[in-house]
Amino acid sequence: MKYLEKIKSKLSADITDVPEILQGSYYRSLDGLRGIAILMVILSHFGFNYILRVTHLFIDSAVGVHLFFVISGFLITTLLLKEKMANGNISLKRFYIRRILRILPVAYLFLIALIFLNIYYKLHIPAFDFIASFLFFKNLPIKNEPFTAHFWTLAVEEQFYLTFPFLLAYSPRYYFKAAMLIVIAIPLISIIGFYQLKYIHLPAAITFVIKVIMYSFWKGPVIILIGSLFSILTFKNIIKPAWGSKYYFLSFTLLSVAIVIQTRMFLFYKPYISEYISAIIMGYVIVLSINGVNFLSAILNNAILVKVGILSYSLYVWQELFIGKKPWQPWLSSLHDYPISLIILVKLVSLFIIALLSYYFFELKFLNLKRRFSITHYVK
Image (cartoon, rainbow, N blue to C red):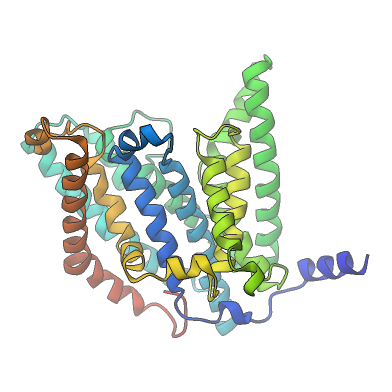
């Protein structure tokens, strides 16, 4: 009883300081976690599952995207709460300048390059699709084009950060309550709605409302909010990492479970339920991975994986030029008669070359400018 009262007291208390676990200025292991996420997306999109079919294994790109969402929600909330602790307020102006410098340059560079490819190769990508991509509303129910399909995730993030930080800046307490309500209510509505819409005929008005709620909140915002809530609960000292020799494999085991249960090929996979549980587990894995000394942290801190994580945004933006098991893009037509393993290798090498050039000769200039709007000791 006393334990529950203590938890209740912590939940209602204001955040007044930064816990020791979050006091670092850079979380190397989370770059490693980004590395895992982007590799899952790339390998899935490039046809690696065709090679894995004999092993009955499957890489689900959606799992990698959700991992990105949870990490993003955790880190952005941590950054803003640190600013609140340091200054007594959150500068939305500085926040949005940082977001613009982080997201827009590479995204717009890709779209400009795609415009030239569209003209040269006669790809027939309509102007409206470019408008939807430039203005970040590709997540709306509109016709999708393969070369810009991945912009739905960028649209989700941009729309999320155009709305929720206002409430966090106004009152972390109200933000926490609203986030908790959404993270509990929306998945419940989505789960009930999914199975009712599948097996029970509901009135048209109710069906429409359920579909709007499911589409508006589930595809991204709820997953981002789960990461955000794990940051707040860590600030409130409600969630604490379990470290020590007996927990050495805990975070690795949990991440493996989170990946497996959300994979659509998993025997016991259930739409919405699996994604929801997986995202919650991912949130706890993030807490365990920060400054942790365990098996997963040793993997995540690997120099190569960290480097892949640092390049993850450029890799994600440019990978759409090479998606698909078959080389159907006109610039890959010469690869048609090669084995799929060689095709995937060529795609990977080409993507990493483009991402490296994009990062070091373009993206890094804006990241350095972005740091001018960050406060010393903040998470970058």
